[in-house]
Image (tube, rainbow, N blue to C red; front, top):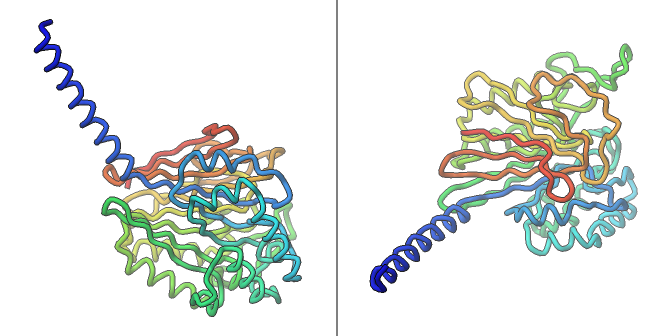
Length: 341
């Protein structure tokens, strides 16, 4: 090949590579990654912090049970939160990634606890302290820790709606006839969110212009037959939520949950939604049900993961697609699901 043609070929190749690199960079900029997890003992080594960091999340979401305190002694609770903040891997993540999230029963203060917990107001302030919420934030004055966060990237928006399934939750019904812990309440009896939070959630969804709306619930929403804590113990609340999701016309609604010490995907066809509703459960970070023998879930997709793990959601705004992954130690992908919206 003549020198001139060689030079021309090289320049064309260089230009092609430059265009390809620009396309890759554009694609990279349009991605948004959520990492989340739950059930984290502050005094047990968490081997996943480095794996979480390697996914380069745009945000880390606590799905509840950030620590295991189970106490109404606020000095004890604050001490345990402080110990969690000294964990090196968590410190490294906090230095580079925004941290948001909710609580569940063990960081709330009482196992399976709800509205009856006498120290809930004080516990709320300790939680907000841990999350770095400013002293003048309206969340300091409201009852319950529910909140909303919005993230915009490449002209697309993700809205993350963080629910409080503890502060207002009324009594559960104990199951005395089987080996299950709880059974569904009589239809129409009780609430998970309470009146004020329901109105707030309705407003957040009906006014949302986001491309995706992510709802964080510390307990599972769809899986309803295992006999532990679940929205299914309040079947009328599940129906109410599904009606709201449809009526709101909010786009790309996804549920994230924790609590169970197992990880799994649940998927349900909801009449009126143009896409299936996914409830992605990620649990737990430092301990999981390795002796798990199985349980019914009519909405399960794939297999239950009993290994310690966390979850990621990677968004492709152009294709309107989300890639869900359950990830274990050493970045091992334990289960994966893709869904278009």
